[in-house]
Image (cartoon, rainbow, N blue to C red):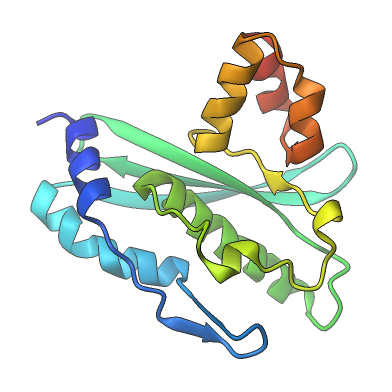
Length: 181
């Protein structure tokens, strides 16, 4: 069986409960650790492995971001999903390691969510702006996500990249790719 077929089966059967509670925001959420624990039985059943890697990148504006790559492999083929999360180096109440750790946790959670098609739109963690104004917060456009696929269709149909950039943040490589379509 090809890897994409195995992944389709896993995506269809995969369930990860929101077992953690945020007492400040009063909502349940799932963590990267919850997702990894829930995926383990599927790994054995389908003879695949999952690896999560991170890369630190610095945007031209000197903002650090963590690029997280979740890879599923059967030894012959690999499929990857990515997530890019900014590190708020000015976050009050956190030490620098906590700021990077928080961004790392979010990156892992969303890269795994992209890989296994975990829809967090109903998740309070996905809609909680943690006190920030919604007009100031843009979601990162991640390769392989539904918004990314819609962006590709939009550009191919003659849509403007600036319209996408008003709604989503993206790295230069992704912007260049969309411009080339």
